[in-house]
Every structure is written in C-alpha cells, then in structure tokens.
Length: 510
Image 1 (tube, helix red, strand yellow):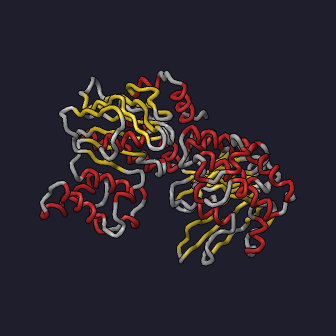
Image 2 (image 1 turned 45 degrees about the horizontal axis):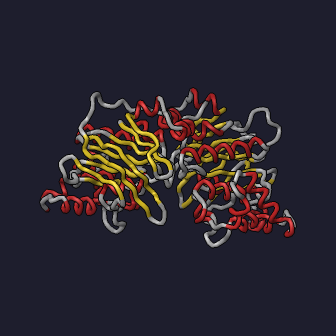
Image 3 (image 1 turned 90 degrees about the vertical axis):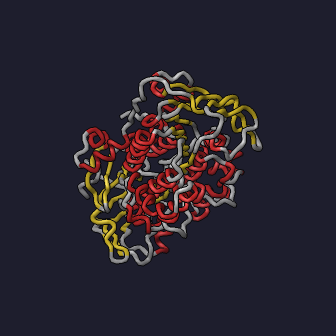
C-alpha cells in the first residue's frame, strides 16, 4: 500500500500508487499516490492546473485516448484498472466508482426530469427492477435531503436552485451504491449556506461507509469534511497527512500559502465617518416577481460597501440599478452632487469584459479612447494600466484565452480603470478563483482603493470575501435588506438570524 494510505486500515476502496500522466509529450501528473478506505474522506487539494482533475479522470477511465498513463497500482474496489478496456470501464463507472462534478447544470440533462436522471444508473446497471425504480428514486432523493422529493422528481434541472441541482447529482451518483464517490469541486459555485449543507451531506455519505475523494482548492471547505489531505502542486504530491494536523501545522510552503489564503481576515475600516456619495431610499424592482423590496442604504465616498446574500437575494439587481443599466420601479438613488459619477463594472466572469478576438491591448486602448485619451497616449497608458494591476505589460499582445483566470481578472480590473472611475462596482469578482488568487486580487483592490481614492461596491455570496475588504455591510435575503451597518459591528454582533447563519457557514470549526 502507498505511504499515503490510511494508516492501520487493512482494506482500501481506492488505491493509487505512482500515477503518471503524459499528454502531448508533457508530464502533467507525476508519481501521485494515495488511498481511501471505506467510510473515509480524502481531500485532493491544489490550485487550478495542479493536476487534480487529470488525476480524477484517470481514476474514472476518462482521460483522452492520446494520454499516456502508468501506475504501480490503480485499484478501484479491488479491480486493477490500469489497462481496462472501455467496455469494462462502463461496467465499473457508476456501479463501483461515481462522480459528482462542479457544474450540476451542465452535468444534468436539461431536457430530462430529475427522476429520470437519478433512475438512469439503476437502468444501466440493472440493480433495481423496473417496478421498484420510482420508489428507489424517491428514497435516494430523501437520502440527499431533497425537499418535496415527489415534486422535484418531476421537475427539470432549470427549475431547481444550484444547491438542489447538486443534491440531485449526488443522488444520481449514489443510485447504484458505488464504493467510491469522487466529488470534483462540488461546492465552488454555491452560496455559503448551501455549500455548508452540501458538505454536511458528503460528510454523512462518508460516515455511512462510502469512500469519498473530495477535490478542491478551498481549504475552508476541506476543513469541514476531510479526514486526510493530499496537497498537489504542478502534478506532484507536496504534502499529505491527517487533516487536523496538516491544516494546523502545514510543513510545505505551498500548503501554508493555501491555508493562509483560506483563513478568515477582517478588514480594519478607516477611522472616522465619510460623506455620503449616494443615498438609496426605498428602491424596489420586479420582473415576473419582486426581486428587490424597499432597499435603503448609504454608499460612502472612499469606502467599500459589501453586499452579501445568497443567489436570488437581489444583490446583482441592486448593483445594476446603481450602475444605471436597470431602472428602479420604486424609490430613488440620489448622488451627492446631483449627477452620477464615473462608474465602472468588474464582472464575475472576466471573459465577459473582453472581445475574444481582440488582444488585451486593443481592449484597453478601446476603453481609453472611450475615456477621451488621445490616440498617441493610448499604448503607453495601456501598458501602465497592466503594470498597475500587477501584470507584465508584454501581455498587451495576448488574447483573453491565453491568460490564466487570475490574469484575466486583473486585466478586467485594468480595463475598468481605463475610464478613470470614481466608483467601481464588483459583482462576484473572485468567486471563480482559487483561494491564493482570490487573496491576491482582494489585496490588489485594497491597494487600488488607497492609491486612487476609489469608492467600491462589492457584491458577493461569500461572507469571508466581504469581511476582508468591506468597511460597511449590507445583508440581503429574498430581495430585502435584513441587516446593515459598519462591517466590524455586523460581523461581531449580528442581529438577524440570517446573518448569523451566513457567519456560521463561513467559519468552519477545526
């Protein structure tokens, strides 16, 4: 057994020793080893590009045909999976090893009802007679704490929230009673409270006897669920061990960086009050239903206002009204000097800020032109903007697809700065980034605010992100502001039950 296997466990559900993956002449995974026992959760941790997903695909026999794979051991429930033909992999997948992926909306067939999706593995593997399948589907939905399972079984994926879609995907993965469940970044796109519920569900699945491999870049999530941790960087294991010991005292510098980036940080707000830049009073907005109800708050100059809440709480609609791209049905937004200041948006998805056919430099020059910068100064100003956000000015000749996620987000911030804004509205600007990249982008925003005197409104579902950057805080639930005030006060002494629930979900206990 690998040295990374659970000490003292005589049986493993999954064992990998010396896994090596080469694609197009490049070694992308090199000598990865770990094992998982029944009833155990092992977290495979690392940033994007570390080799986690390639490792998982090897465990499921889903690597591209041209990939070269070797291993001293690759066993799933006692089956040697090193040279299995595809026909045998199809027998193994679902029945002995199953996958829960990051994006449930993509993984679930949009045209098929949830009940049929969950029943498919039962049909493929013939584990339950046709007459008993509906009852088994309902049982599986109950097992994953799906509310109103009979009604949900009749619905299609788009009719479910993100958390319910993820529960449906877990039910489908568990349908054929696999020995090993691989959860690949299953909570990345979820709100903090929903994430906590899904993590609790996965922990219960492990406690009930399933071997769980939890793939993540988020040490806070790992802290909630894992028995042991395997840290991967550049395709190699750099550290492994029991979760509590490793997270409390990581030996490797990279592991320490991951742990530090996931640790909660509280911003120290500037002393004294600041003048009101915008006063929002009684703002409401409806589409097919009310999405914003009687929202009132003050945006203060030179400070960061954090707006936090779950998906569908009205955060983005509120931001769009401040930007002027959405008109409120009721209420008012009054700017201090009677006119909207220069205001720019930084998207959640930085690709949305760029034309994929254009270089980064061309996009920046276009933004500078819109801001009135003379043609002769645009090239040098574009290079200076990239330098200001910590990017190599040589990247002006790259297209967005050639940049990493963190580089694209920095470039998107540079594009927003090209118009010399007074206010930045940031809508979930770091939700898709690894913990270390997230920490760097938030530190960049803090520096830019100080250097430029920017006012910021930052929208997020992640209270940890909000706590690290916000001076003032607005908490939203179901279209209404349920609590607001100085960030330190709200975080230290929350008054509303929903705020307390968000705090509990954002602060895992070791």
